[in-house]
Image (cartoon, rainbow, N blue to C red; front, side):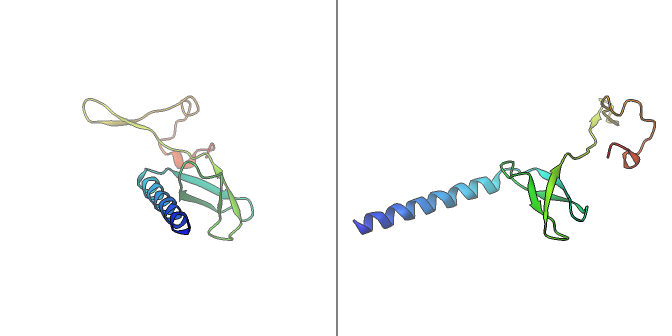
Length: 103
């Protein structure tokens, strides 16, 4: 009876290891975080199942996930790239998003 229990536990451990290996092969998004304590902004590669907090690398306190700003680009048939603007950027006259007040 004990031998059967040991085999059963070993099988569960092996299945868990296989599941973790499968999950580690999946593409994971990079999330952006801001620490409420020290205002440090950082990015972290995490699975989508992770909760909305991560430890701040500066002070170690919990940081909250925030929405990231990104640039969408498209390539025309002639090979030229251009930005894809949404309604928030349609009135912007700047060619550089680093000065954006929405960020």
